[in-house]
Each structure stands twice: as structure tokens, then as C-alpha cells.
Length: 267
Ligand code: KIV
Image (cartoon, rainbow, N blue to C red; front, side, top):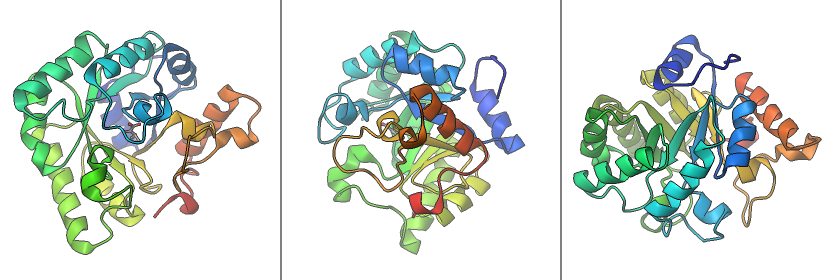
């Protein structure tokens, strides 16, 4: 998408139909949101990964709704064209009423244009309720960082055929409930490709191979300043860039032509 038309859920659906890759990247403040928006990133994600890369925590679990609203409001000020997607943090959507209230605050106070939540069939009623109230929703399956303690660590999901089948059912159930997009994290590339093909809604992958409808990265991974362990799917685009704008442009271009992620970034 080279024009300055505002990116909407319709744009994303059209891009999927046209086979144009969707580019997404995290931002947690106005300066970076503005920079990546100007670089042509279609979906600007205020991820709860901010708990790790901004706050220096071990997991995303302690991030609060008020913190998400604060960072969303900051990022929103920098965005002109991209769609601002914001994570519902851990335990802010445990009941239907709580989910509605939390999503409404992200939109009214934080300027979110889409909310993202982790979970599969267990979240279908929440997605249906939010979607029914006119709230664009993105699901998030595969590795769900908010469930890291239940999953026993940050590991690839869906290697076993039974788990892979469950993930397909999760994806279809979220779509049927009204989700507008789906993030798949850390799953075998072949599984992500099959799910992307089967779904009508766009699938945005991270550690999910090149055949998803789009890609998302944590900004700090792209800039090579990730604190702690560097995930296999991350790539330091600063290594060959003159400046940050150059690195983000290289990421956008590599996703658009299907050069990122490479096989070495995939499972
Ligand atoms: O919180 C985040 O940044 C995310 C991405 C890893 C998809 O959810």
C-alpha cells in the first residue's frame, strides 16, 4: 500500500484477497509509531511485549490495562495512516463484561482501532461479544506469552498432529466468532501456511514462516536491542542499515517480497 489512505480492517481483508503481504511492527510511543507509520507499516501494534522491552520485566503478565492505555495513547499521536492494534493485557478479558470494559477503554482512552487477545476456542464468546459491539478484534494463537507459565516456557506450539488439529479448530472458531485478523506465534511454518490458506481473515505470523498473509516483529528485535535471549525468528535489520529509518524500510521491503522470514527464522 503506497498511498496515504487510512488502513482499516477492509484494507487488510483486501490485501489478503490480493495476495499483498501485510506488514506489522510494534511501537510503544509517538516517535517510533510515527517513524514506522511513515515507512508504510500497515498495522502498528502496541503489544504487551512492552512489559519486557520497555519495562524490563521477565514476562508480559504484570502489564496493566492502564499501562497499555498510556502507551496506546502515546503511539496513537504518531500514527496517521496505519491501523493501531493494541493488546488486551493478561486478565483484562477474563469475563465478557470485563473484556467489553477493557476494550472500550483501549479504544476511547487509548485510541486503539483494533484489540488483540490471546486464546483459541476458549475466547470465542469474548470475541463474539466484542465484535458484536463493533470492536475490531485480532486473535492470537500458537505461543501465547500471557500463558507462559501454563505452557512451561516460550516454546514452539503445534508440532504434534493432535495439537496442530486443535490449532486449526481454534483459528476457524475465532474467525466464525467475528475476529478480523489472527496472529500466529511460534508455530511450524507448514501449519501456519495451511491455516492461512484455509482462513478468510488475514493471518499475521511471527515465527510462523513466510506463507502467512503478513508478518509482525517486536521493534526491539528489528533494531537489534532485544534485552536477554534473542528469539530464532528475530532479525537485526540494523546490522546492514545506515539508520533506523533504513532498517525499518528494509524490514517492510523484505516482508513485501517474501524474503523475510527466511527459513532460518522459521520452525
Ligand atoms: O506483544 C507483542 O508484541 C505481540 C507480538 C509478539 C505479536 O503480541
